[in-house]
Length: 225
View (cartoon, rainbow, N blue to C red):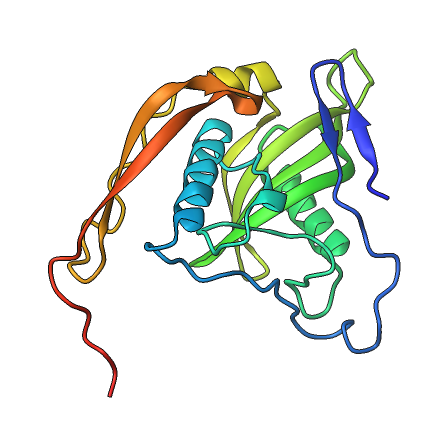
């Protein structure tokens, strides 16, 4: 059963962890099977809208991956799917959080536990990590939730883009996000998808109602021989 963490400002569930791995899964990658993007599939477009708003409102840290089964630019690190060959997801995320804390200049942050993480392939790997930590310079000893966006490449390169306390749910919901720009407008073989906000934000993160229309492709795709 998944555990949970509670703070004064928000409540966040942790992903379930695997206690044991079979001999087959202990070494090697095991990726989650995700559906390939399909601009003709309405469900893909609906999931893209959800991903787009959650990503931009939370700056990539808070995405409801359980509702997404298409491939997007970022992906979660979650059991039982392995990203690293020689370590469990827990070990890898813990290591990323420690490297971010160490790299953060002037930080007196002590890691307590990691909560969640997602990643994107780039020149190295870009991680979004949420973790529980104590600020040893603070008079308040209670652990708090922190977030770090960090790019790692090899054993020594570590670049931090964001290192902060996690915003409250209310602060995330209040972030204003422009409607998604046209999708696939640079590919004449695919239909261009246009988005229009049709209603105010509601629910968690206050995501607005958005409709979409397709403009047919300019040219017929070239089929493979």
